[in-house]
Length: 88
Image (cartoon, rainbow, N blue to C red; front, side, top):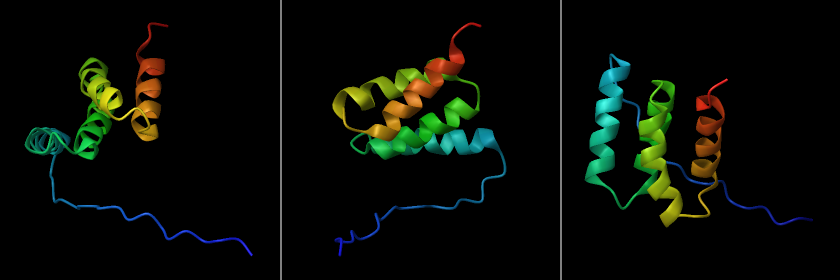
């Protein structure tokens, strides 16, 4: 019999945000208010990458990865943004 691990706990906040621009603004504020929590910056990066702002997303991701080198999701997002932002 293998040992079972408890599921990871994740904090999910549902906001009634009418526009992508407002969601981006709220995410920027959360990232500024809690710079010690890389999840806020990561969420901001997801929104930036979806908003076609790869330069800003990479700028936010670099310090996250430098201070959290085992943050796999951030590294994967960085690679994905780099892959899609290269000139064809």
